[in-house]
Each structure stands twice: as C-alpha cells, then as structure tokens.
Image 1 (cartoon, rainbow, N blue to C red):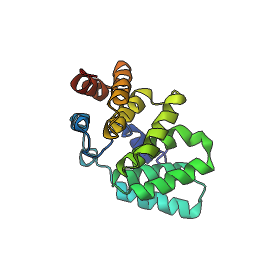
Image 2: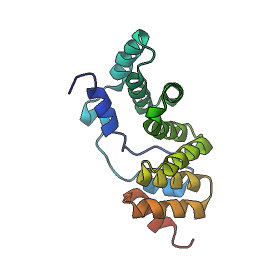
Image 3: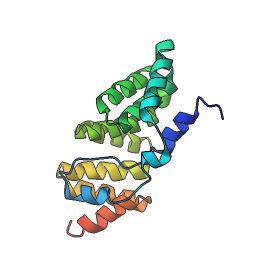
Image 4: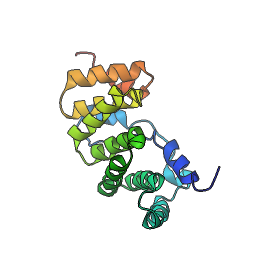
Length: 178
C-alpha cells in the first residue's frame, strides 16, 4: 500500500469507535461502557494528520481523500465544527463519498448536539442500506435523548438483531416496559 493511503486506512479502521453523546439520556451510560483501544495505544497523531492534509489541500483543494481524512482527524480531536465544514465540502464536491461522509457527519452532528441533523443522517444511511447496525443503534440513542422511548427501543431492537452489542444491551436494559 502506498504511504498516502495509510492515514486514511487508520481513520477507517477507527470509524467503529463509539460516538460520544451527551449524558442527557440514561441509556447513554450503557452506550459508552465498552472499552476500546485508546488513540495513544494506537500511536495516532491526529494533529499531525490535520497538518499534513491541510498542506495537501493547499496544493489541491479538490483532494477528496484529504478532506475526508482531515475531517475524521478533526473529529477525533473534538473539532467538530471544523470537521463538519470539511465533510460538507466533500459532500458538495462528490456524491461518491456520500456514505462515508454522511456517516462521519452524523457523528459530528451528534457531538455538537445537533440531534435532528444527526438523526436525519442516520436515517439516510438506513434508507440506503449502509452501516445498518451502527446507524440503527446510534439513531436509537439519539431518539432516547429526544425522549422518544418507543422509537429508541425499536431502533435498538433492530440494531441488536443486526449484531450491535451496545444497541442490544440498551434494548435489554431500557425497553422491558415499552
């Protein structure tokens, strides 16, 4: 593999990382119980990735891979506004990146507490049959935050049936009475 794609492969391998949602919902605590490898253990320097891809974008503003990877790296250091700007530019530029870009955008919106926008993005992914188990689970957590318990339970049930352990756990722990 070329060294140019290595940072993108790291970013994609980490896309399964849990999304951080506000503590507004009781199920959210369940959502974040799974311990994953930390970025320090993986030795990923997101600030350096941002610098590298910012430099690449100064040379070629249409470098889609650089925009996607820089957006992801910005998200990993909690610069969700900057990440959202990059990902929206990418979506406008090329619809072939839509599923990855929409997925990342949902993550950024969730962390910015733009729950309606995040839910719309997860719904778009579900409609397109993309990232189903994660999208159903995450949309369920957003519905829980928005106090739509029945909708949350329905999404967690579907996500759990598709293999999302966090969604299944949330369903088992919070949906017995629904």
